[in-house]
Every structure is written in C-alpha cells, then in structure tokens.
Image 1 (cartoon, helix red, strand yellow):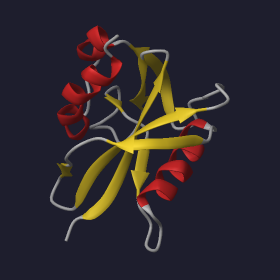
Image 2 (spheres, one colour; image 1 turned 90 degrees about the vertical axis):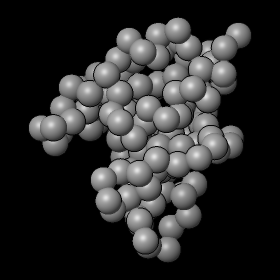
Image 3 (cartoon, rainbow, N blue to C red; image 1 turned 45 degrees about the horizontal axis):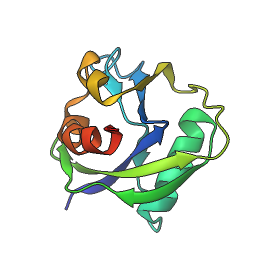
Image 4 (cartoon, one colour; image 1 turned 135 degrees about the vertical axis):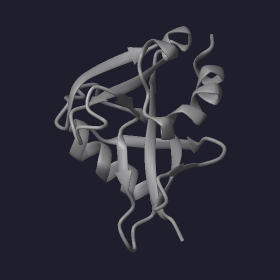
Length: 128
C-alpha cells in the first residue's frame, strides 16, 4: 500500500501558489504545490495544515479536494486539496521562490510530475 502525501492548491484572487524546490538535487529548481507526507494517525487535512505551516509559515483552511490522485515513485500517492489562507504572509522556509500563477500561466513553470495531473482541474478553478 502506498503512503499518503497531500498537496495544497492555495488559491488567492484567481491565482495558484507555486513553490520552487531546493532539494533533493533531482527536484531542485522545479515547481510544486506545498505539502508533504501524512504521518501515522494524522488525517490528510491535518497533515496539509501542518506541512504548509512548516513550509510557508502560514495556516491554511482546506475548502475541498481535487479529483483523483497521482503516484509518486512506487511508494507514495498524492492527493491535492483546495485551500485558502486568512492572513497572507507566506514565506518560503523550505523553497527558494514562490509565484502566484493565473490559469494561463500554469505552463510557465516546470512542475514536478506528480503535480501535473491536477493542473487541468486547477485551470477550471482559476478561470474567471
């Protein structure tokens, strides 16, 4: 059984928050949705809140989940939640750059493969 990983599609004013990785070397310079592994006994929603707080220093509110999931190697499975932040002071604690992307800009960054399957649905969420 694959271990669960959660990602946050943080949306603000019709834009999606993208974060650029610094590690591991194979992922450095590529973009992702913030998030991480669900710990034993933790709900996916609680894991998402914890991971985003660790990565960006802000608290998110989960507003729903995107359809489907994506495999990460042979060991993990990613699901993605739509999320909002009440106080907008995200700071990249584990990334070197943040970008707010409109629907038409989603292809402007080099996304990590597990995040790519969610971009089609996110375009619909971001569209005016």
